[in-house]
Image (cartoon, rainbow, N blue to C red):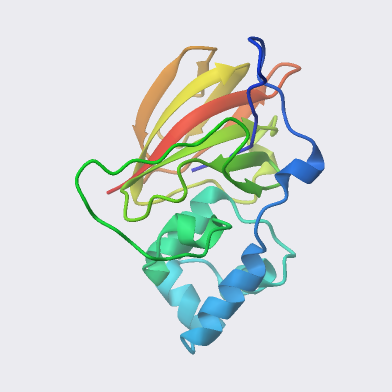
Length: 212
């Protein structure tokens, strides 16, 4: 799936505004992946075989020379058999609890942030582990599919609703789908796809990534 961006509601009604650059700084994903790979004594070729991400691209991610999309991080998480939030959340308490009625609350402006060159993302309810659905708030800054090095693809399904602006969903199967504020779509993410914003303002979307 495409990358996500972070936007937050103010205390009063009105458009959702994109955050400042310093608000988008999240965890050091590269250092976290390097530590995880070394702890498992895996080579770059090993993780490439497990995740489908090339060894050269994985090395660039570890050195923070390449900012991976959420889709790429999802493939890495699935290949290494860890949760996506484990790789992107600032909370490293991996203690898991399973009990009826569990819940997680994300207040306005909170969440685990992950910015890329085409989107800024915030993972919501990141403290809740062992969940199949990951809600994400994203601001899409890309204006052309050409801005993505590769199109997104993962073993998941996606629901997305547009909160602000106009989103265009590009797919290898369908013609570009234009969605305006209040519109939504649910689709199979195993087919290559990506997102762009249309118009002068960035599209802000709330979407849910559902593991198959």
